[in-house]
View 1 (cartoon, one colour):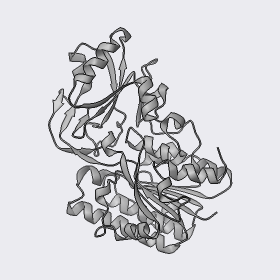
View 2 (view 1 turned 90 degrees about the vertical axis):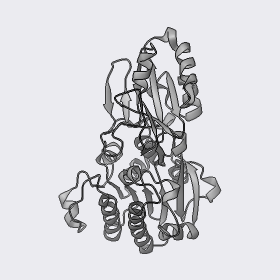
View 3 (view 1 turned 60 degrees about the vertical axis):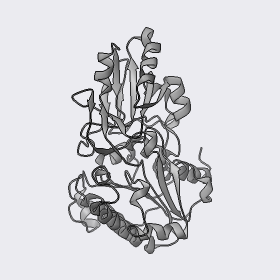
View 4 (view 1 turned 180 degrees about the horizontal axis):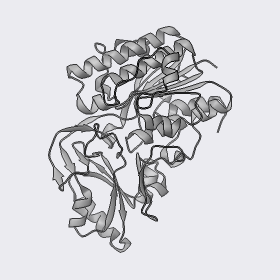
Amino acid sequence: MGKILLIVIDGCALDYLSDETTPNMMRLGKDGFFKTVKSAIPSVTNVNHATILTGSFPEEHGVAGNYFYNPQTGEQAFIEGPGHLKKETILDVYAAQGKSTAILSVKGKVVHVFGSPVETKISVQEPDENLLKRLNLDNPPAVSALAANDWVFNACFNLIQQDDPDFVYCTTNDYMMHNFAPDTQQAKTHMAKIDEWIGKIYDVNHEREIYITADHGMNRKDHLVNMQIKLDAAGFNTVCLLPIKDRYLENHIYQEGGTLYIYSNEPAKNEDLAEYLRTLPFVEKVYDRTEAAKELHLPVDKIGDYVILADSTTVFAETENEDKYIKVRTHGSLHEQTIPLISVNARRDADTYQYSRDIVKFILEDEKIK
């Protein structure tokens, strides 16, 4: 089997890609294919790295957010370490077969959650001095710096030239996408730098199996809603959990995202709660736990009694008041589910790929690993 490179450009909505700004990615698309696929829901980071790396939906791999709540114990915490996955990743499989693997990430949590079996781990947030020297890399910039993504692709290029691992997983930070729309000069400059590195990596070996996708898209929103305050005021005893919630506040200072898990502390009022949720004009979908597990492929034991999804201009957030009207760029809903997939030397025809999970799903099928 040949070498595989899987690139996940965090928050890369389709509009960030163009012939003018990203000609090398378009070149890969012409040599292979360029299409759209769907991410898992919620369209947030941890859920979709888990989905991509395991080749499965959350109902199988067990990760339903960046943050979790245990209603039995009241425990709440960030998902930023091992132990949350219920299914092996492609990195686990390759490592068990004695193949060389590497994971490169801007965010340290990606390495901590998914990188346990990996031979080479490179993180902007937590650099390894010995690796920096061996790969001839300068000290990385801050995680929220626009230069962080440029640095991680430089590291990827140097690593492939020097070690050429069997499987490389390289991912970025979506700070730029949260702050700059696709038509801004900052966004165009940033994407052009990423594209330049991808072109260089491709030209090292045109036979390499390469996949470029995103964990989720990104859109502008102008209405932030604190559902905990709203439900308290309406007389419902609940716990509202934002699955987008993480420590990277420079990306979403109000933890604003398009999916919300609602845990009811008064089961006798559940029907009233559901009816109330359906009256809210900014709530696009209301699912009970069973419906959400079925329709959204979510793990039934990791979500609330209700799962609600926001409309295209609204997000749920931890604001000081019920409603806040400001312009932000974020994700988490169905409106950020459509993402690009560019591939060269892919396992299957383009039409076969419908979800981001299909990338690794097909690799594992070919390896006859169930």
